[in-house]
Length: 210
Image 1 (cartoon, rainbow, N blue to C red):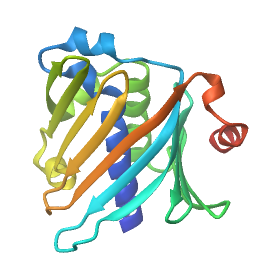
Image 2: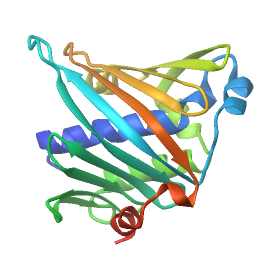
Image 3: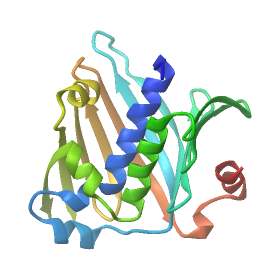
Image 4: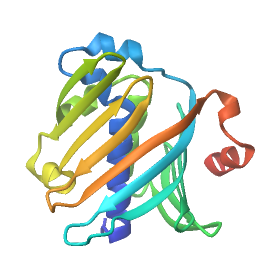
C-alpha cells in the first residue's frame, strides 16, 4: 500500500488513539491503581484541541473538534477548525470524509494493514491489551488522583516513525503528547467529556454507522 502524506497522518492518529484507550492498564508499577481510576464507558465523547509544533516554524498549527469512541463499533474524530474533516474507524474500514463526501477509504478486505490496525484497536476496547505490550515498553506513575504514562516503541522502525508518546489523565485521558524523531511535537488536550448514550448526537451516530 502506498502511503501518502494524508495516510501517514491517519496512521499516526490511529496509534495515538491506541495509546489513549489502553496504555494506562500496562503502566509499569501501579497497574491496579490506574485501572481503578479509569472509567470504561460504552460511549465516550468530548472536545479535543490539538497543536503541532513543526521544527523551524515559530507558530504552531492548531486545530480543534469533537471525538466519540463507541466500544465494539468504532471511533469518530471530527475536526471542526480550521477546516472540517472527519475520520471514521470501524472494524471493516478507515474512512476520511470531507465536505460530506468520502475522500479516502481503506478497506480491511483489500488492505491487510487495516485489519491488523483494527484488530489491535478493538482488542484494546475489549480489554485485551497483549498486542500493545508487544509493541511498546511502558512506564507509569500515580500521584494523588492523576497518572502519567510514557511509551517507547520496541521496534526501531516504529520508534523512528512515531517517536515517544506520553499520556496524562485521571478518570479519562486528558493529554497526549507525541515527540517525533524529526523534532516535531504534537499535543492533544481532551475536555468536556461525557459518557453514555446521551453523549453522542444523532448526527454522530449516523456518521459512525453509515
